[in-house]
Length: 164
Image (cartoon, rainbow, N blue to C red; front, side):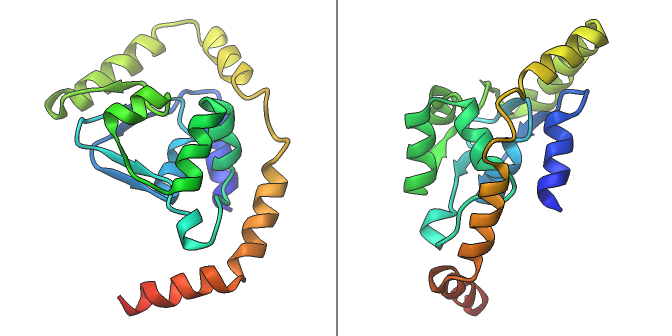
């Protein structure tokens, strides 16, 4: 279900702009892969925490990530599970801009207004063009996620999470 929702964002006919003012961890980072433009405050942190917890992305975010940023950068993010700050995320290509906290929303809205002033046909065409890589691995990702969900590593993580 979540994969369908995120695919509607990503494959929709309107761009989705993310204004990130805190942490995006695990599923939060996966949700960000369904956005078209990402602005973040300097203090924001990003981490794909799935591998250390015995699971992979399950909402199509892994496939989108590998299509959006250089392959080596994607491997670093998903295999290490380490958090990166906004400047590192910018250098990896995961976010578009680092914006001071006090101007995050105004910059995001100004960008949305600039896009809205463009030809809707051209905007829709570019959005469609950006998804040509899909859906090669989406089904595999969902199936593997479901398999790993039942594995001991992930079950142990869930049990520990509930205890803490």
